[in-house]
Amino acid sequence: MKAFIKIKESDNVAVAIRPIDKNVQLDIDGTIIELKEAINKGHKFAVKPIRRGEDVIKYSFPIGHATEDIEVGQWVHTHNTKTNLSSVEEYQYAPNLTKVRSENKSYTFKGYRRKDGRVGIRNELWIVPTVGCVNGIADQIIRQFHEKVGSIAPFEHIHVLKHNYGCSQLGDDHVNTRTILSNAVKHPNAGGVLVLGLGCENNEIDEFREQLGDFDSSRVKFLRSQAVMNEVEEGVKLLVEIYESAKEDKREDVPISELKVGLKCGGSDGFSGITANPLLGQFSDFLVANGGTTVLTEVPEMFGAEKLLMERAKNEEVFEQIVDLINDFKRYFEKHDQPVYENPSPGNKAGGITTLEDKSLGCTQKAGTSPVVEVLKYGEILRTNGLNLLSAPGNDLVAASALASAGCQLVLFTTGRGTPLGTFVPTIKVSSNTQIYETKPHWIDFNAGTLIDGESQEELLNDFISYIIKVASGEKVNNEINHFREIGIFKSGVTL
View 1 (cartoon, rainbow, N blue to C red):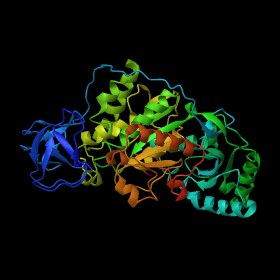
View 2 (view 1 turned 180 degrees about the vertical axis):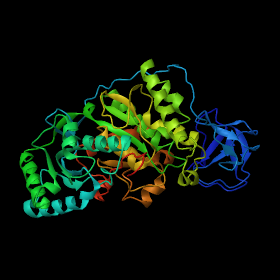
View 3 (view 1 turned 180 degrees about the horizontal axis):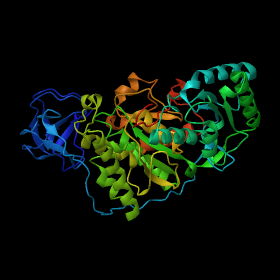
View 4 (view 1 turned 90 degrees about the horizontal axis):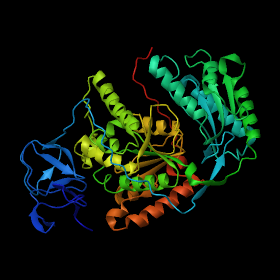
């Protein structure tokens, strides 16, 4: 195995692929350098002298500046590098678009065509509480439903989308809760939904039903617990009604253009921007070329790489939407008296990520090179096929849930440190290194670390495409097998 990788010719740092001892000599572009100190895997070392105040260059872009003189062969990290990021900025429209290639192959997967024309990759039965007070009641309803019907086929799973909200909320928090839950109720992965309320909550069930707009009344039922004698018995009756309506549900061939995929990362390391995130970027370009849709979110992890996304806006209107997306989130930080660069996390730093620019330039590679066709606000549902941006924070569960709420049937989640998390749609973990894949096979679904081990990008991408089609056609992923299915809702205001 190679000892290091220099990502771009103009970089003044390289990344250690494995631990390298002090005093080891390395050939960097024909020049022999000697390491001044031991370098851990995923971490950077200088391949050129970097004077105090000069930019540290990785991915051919600045990831910060040196806070002291850095010699060739010296470790480059948080002790001698600082972010260049500042607050709200002004941007100029300077398009640099890559033409979307078209595919000749006809890719399909086995999905569920819903009454409204949308397609699900799962056929699940969900209970969606309007308020956290009824989470326990929902569990009781499911237990008694299982006892009554035995096998739940054709439903593949039944679970509760538990959350702690729906009451004691005001303003945007109340709107966010109702919107995310409404979107979940109409998600195409759900073959049926029981909306379960208490009766005295802010998220009142009749208003909730009205906000849903058109829905299939044979598949979506409502129950106010305080309005009936035995809420568990009534809940079971409603689930049986949904179950009877779904008995003929079957998978059918669906073109891959119907696939909507969320792009997410968490627990990133120094390899995330070299292996796993570029793999997702290649997949995103592949899916867009076949008429499908991908969605990039985690706005704070665009800071420092936002200009690369702005260059790819399909027109000036979308460019202005991206500017607003970035600056609105920076204002959110400032409103709470927090610096916009309060990132990366301790785990990111331990894995070799030094600054937010370092993290963002790696993170945004998940979006490939396709033009950005639309920017969605938090809680909005996808309208346009192609690469979309979505407003949501970097928090893993909130961001993954926002992607699912927007209509993504699955989420691709890269990680270098490992995480078991899953939202209420299949959440595929893609490892950036082979070690975490081998250590946590019950968390990780696909290994992109083989790129470092010598596998070609083309071969890995083809394997990945085949795997995604299998998952879209019903193959379970680890978060489903482990029953890690959660929902997180963005909160920024007071609690009554």
